[in-house]
Amino acid sequence: MIDDHRFLESANVYGNYYGVPKDEVSQALARGLDTIVKVDVQGAATIKKILPQAVFIFLAPPSLEALEDRLKRRRSESSQDLALRLERAEEEITSLPIFDYVITSDHDKLDDVVSQIDAIVSAEKCRVKPRTVKL
Image (cartoon, rainbow, N blue to C red):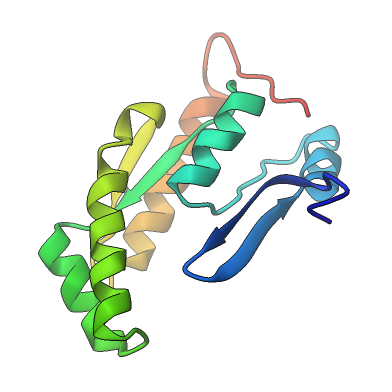
């Protein structure tokens, strides 16, 4: 799919390949559906070049210390991988200017994050000059 350019964006992140299928996004947008994709900062930057009129939301940890604590509790990474993720998170925070909104994602408060995303979607639908996103 990468070789056939069938992804809106794709990347190798922490040794795993991820991608956003272009056809699925295109079809959803053509049907007038609100379309949410979850990508890292690199993916958001790539998509912003292709679809600058899209809405970009940065999900931030309350602090780097809180992120470190969260990742340690998961026990899903080696100490070396953990250090790499924290370093990358610190770098990603400097990319905030490419985003339209930032939401702080506190531990065990998923409902708050969902409510805030819902509020952003609602607010965007109330714009005097609505954004039109076409792929």
